[in-house]
Length: 491
Image 1 (cartoon, rainbow, N blue to C red):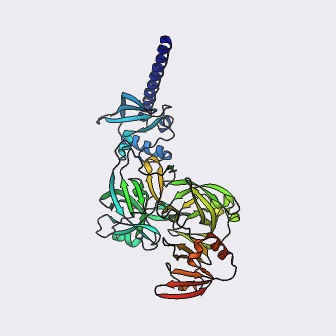
Image 2 (cartoon, rainbow, N blue to C red):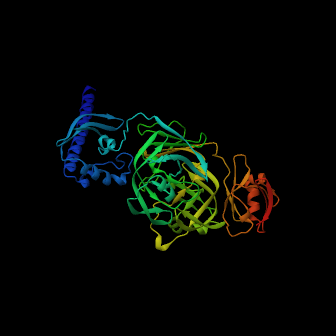
């Protein structure tokens, strides 16, 4: 037995020595590649999930080339103590640059001796993965025009700007008038991606955002035409700087520093893709003919609907053949217009959560503009706001916690209108889809629908009643209360 114990100890020690030797050799190779400013040699040393700060792995070359070119010649990397914790190896080391103070770091390796992250590089982007996570701000918001509305200040302007928090935006946009009032200086023209393609926009660098008591410097923005009541929108500006938690029960956006984050709720972690600079999540869609397709959808609080499938995804899966069209319309995305058809599908599934009878818009396919889409579509605010959500960009994870709206009935399309139930199950006009109908021109958004044909509004909470109403081919008689007036229209 003693011989066996000694043998096992010898094997363990040899294994541990071999692992340390492999790690040190990896750092030596890394040192040589850094000295030569050779990203190709570094790339082979990195784990698949290696990132710099909150960046995505697809941006590693951009970040590491930037770092290597920003620093003077590297003399050496001096390796210190190492320790193994939960199958990860932590190695203390110093970057020694000619004529500069040494930069202390940790190299962290996975079980395959590939580099997971380098704390010195993270620190350049104000990220400490080991920091205790604490709340740094709580920002109140409102729902305005079906968007998350918050107020910020910009640059040296004393006025507040009403901004839409849009997780589907990889930066900030302002309308021309607001940009003028914020003292924005246009620095160049560039191409910007929108739903349906790209367009040329004016670009400004080095702006400052004041939100709560937080200050975000060196923020870029583009100038887009005014749309709705908002001065502009922004999204990634928060996501890249804070763990961002949106709570529809308390109507606050709570911001936390990045670090060793332990989620406080019951929701399971939902890992997203961030290669496009936007959070993209996997979802399953089930159509009336039983067709089920999986897609990658942008998590997009700026999209004012349940779900939209982009043209290339629609075309690839022949989705229009599986959808009973209930309306046709035009989608507007910051000045870009695309035709869409709308209908209802029996179910969508998001991270184990199922939602029945969900409205969906399918964008038309354009053979001459088929390569613009970085995702298959976008998940909009109407489904997102059934959850309180927390996005941790450092770990590419979102937590979806069901809230008071979770079991809310879905909106539905009917004769040129989109109708929805409020929290008290009152039926109201959410959108007017047919802008040519003379009777509908009398109707305003938010008007209360009391009765449709022989169905009182409360009857349509029952899916079977709604199905019968939709199946009626004759025109439908609506009784609508608008302000202190009641009117009847036939559509």
